Picture 1: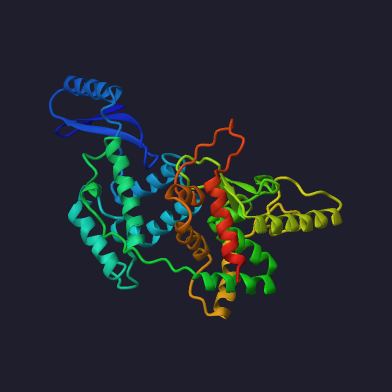
Picture 2: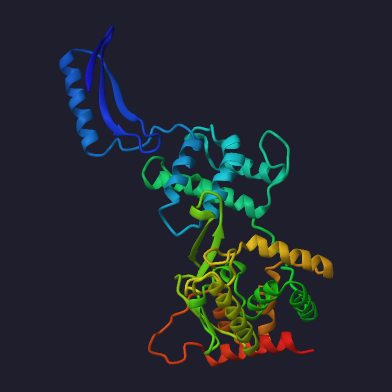
Amino acid sequence: MAIYPRRDGWKVVVYAGVDPVTGRQRQISRQVQGSRKLAEKEETRLKAEVMAGRHRGTAAKTLGEMVEFYLDWREYNGKSIGPQTIRSYRGLYEARIKPGLGKLRLPQVDPPALDRFYSALRKSGSLRKPGQPLSASRLRDVHAVISGALGLAARYGWIAYNPAALVKPPAPHSAKRAMPTTKQARAALQAAERQDPELYLFLRVEATTGLRPGEVCALWWQDFDLEAAEVLVGYNVVHAKGLPGGYVRKRTKSQHGDDRPIALDGRTAALLREHRGRCEARAREWGGELRPDAYVFNADETGRRPLRVDTMGKRFGKLAAELGHGYTLYGFRHFMATQLGAVATTATIRERMGHGSLEVTGGYVHRVSEADRAAARHMGDLLDSE
């Protein structure tokens, strides 16, 4: 805080704290014409405004600075977000937002500017350099980042309103998901059983339960009750650079993050018991025992590291190419959802797929419903019958 003489008066400078975005110290300055006493009154007035919180805003000039601040904030605040998602957002910022709108001053980021930017991304991927057009789904991710950054700025009172709230990016086209027919599913399982037994078991678990591939990779042996033919699903595995060990086992996408019990058909439970026996024998060879938290589908001899989803995807992709099948690993998950429509209610299918929350009450003797058991038997018989 200081008062400096000027040729036509005085300059008053008051310290206003640290800028929440840039991290730099902020100062408020005013020019005062007249006597030093008037300058001192202005200094007192500015100090009172700072104490009242009227200068808590940011001096950030550009959208780029605001987005960088938002991404740092978003990683640890708000609704839970996965490491791959936040990494993807940062990539979009560096590749699309920063070179496109990053240097714009915040007041310049208005609805027309955003509309022009989104149109350019859909047309050629850039405002200035023609290239690969951005898909509608990725454009919605760009919008989510920009809207989140401007929304946070508006909530803190740094800007008057969120201009992105007035802009709607194009909705993604709902593409039909590729999935196997019943004949193709059986053929793929039979080929995997001959060529790659581990992939066969992985596919069978996915096809009969409807689990996401990442959920299958996240399964520990303690998640299973093989005598009761049940599995408790509540986690997903995500591999990404920068994570400790290269991966994280995190809660699933279900609405409240609850564990959901799912019935297994008899054949799948038997195959898992055989697989567990092999894992136990392998552990004994190493002079140890199979831990309850060992991964069922593991990448090392001890079962401490899960298999990567993309590894299983590549193994299945090679098999599918040999068979001439045009669907990915996720096709088996969607296959189950469509096939169960013949024997199960929508609620049961949603239960198995994990699209909603599932309330688990400890007082029930049978955690898995009879309808869910019928769903498990149907999927097992469907894959095993000729």
